[in-house]
Image (cartoon, rainbow, N blue to C red):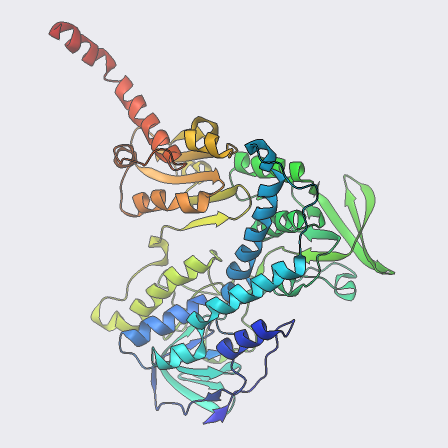
Length: 513
């Protein structure tokens, strides 16, 4: 048995972060003596790796799980859990600001205790962390947990520290990290990413956010609400460039209303430090400008973690931008080795990693029985950007369908036509359902609403199970709920279809009189 090879710290090292480390990378952990052979060796203990390891072990496989940092990966430590905890605090502030429209007088001054907000984040993250703990995976699932840096040694072995692990199959689940920007001076002045922003204990007075994707938008709105003066720099012409244009416009209007400064089509030339300030030199439409801030948050994409794995030794091909090369069965160019999660997939979401891990388990362990042919492309993948309002989507956009030669009908309902949204004072948004023209076959949906992430699952269920708009239209929805917007959109399809029978039914009813 060999000791864990590294000591991990998480700033600030208070009792909550110490408890987090005790769960997710125990300082006194001793790596187990390797088994003679493993059915599956999993490298990386984020969502993809944890689900793969636990699922395989529950099915009777002998499994080893390797992690060099904190178990739980991005989701637990620097992604979903801390970000949504912070967003919840920010929404409380927003509710207070808008209280007057509900007949409630807001206080003259809203006292935001930012250190307490961040302490709550650390406490909640720690409360959730036992789910991903080394102790749980070893004792409950029977997984051999190794801490250290993994490296493929040859065709059937991985080394971690002084241990050599022999495998029948292996899964690479090493995730991704924030992409580094080649901006002159950025590294010198220092900047935040999702990996460091949740360690803050004081709120930046002025915060520049570089990037208008989902991470940048979520954190820009959150920090503006928590007291920062936020300036968002986006190289494109709008926010959320991959989403529905009307959805992005709603978010942009919300941002402007809340005081976020948006600098579109901005090209950053260089960054320098002047005394305590970080000064961004940028250009818009040929005009050079400067922006002085206290902190810079970079949110411009993810890069796969493929370094140090020695993938060349086992014939696994990869691209430094796209990650490990896989086929539709999540198999790499070495048929004994699979990859799953951010390290190889275009969907960089926790739930996508979870769903794909279930494919790896089946394909890696049971292909000999003809069961391991489940495809990544078979997944119907929803996602949500947790701004306020939220933007959720599933399936194809109309332009994607039309590019494949599929004509599309769109049935849309604005939230100001939904009673519960009116009652809640949350009428910014809509539901759009996309169907194959002339049919009720659902192709996709976009929902913009304060709880769009909760609403999109109904449409996802319908698409996954080949249920069309007719099935949604005849499903009784509780009144009043904002999810009625989905039923109302389905009703529009039913009404359009009934129009074609109107003449016939009118003649029949006239004859019956």
